[in-house]
Amino acid sequence: MQHKEKGISLGILSIAILSMTIILILALMKVYLSNQIYHESKKINLLEAEVAALKEEHSILQMNVEQLKYKSRIADTIFSMDENKEIIDATEEEAPHD
Image (cartoon, rainbow, N blue to C red; front, side, top):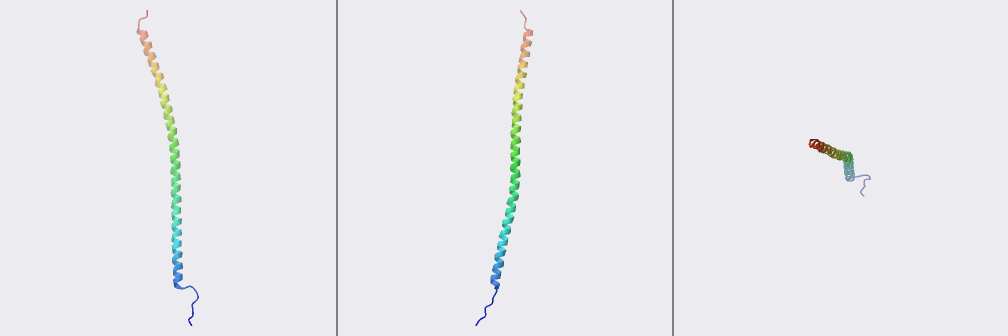
């Protein structure tokens, strides 16, 4: 009769070590990719916050430009009215009075 050895054979041990190595490599890859995704998402969030702030600043500046344009139009109209009044006054002074 043959005597069977009890325990783990070399083939089973090598398969177990190989499978554990593959699992470890896959787990490390997942951790690395998750870490990279996390850092990239932080960068994206910072950039999105900057974009939002710049858009808000742009709208504020656009409103300021519109206000300045309006004031300029009003000032030009008043200046134009003053010039017309001076011209009318000057022509009335030059005209002979009856």
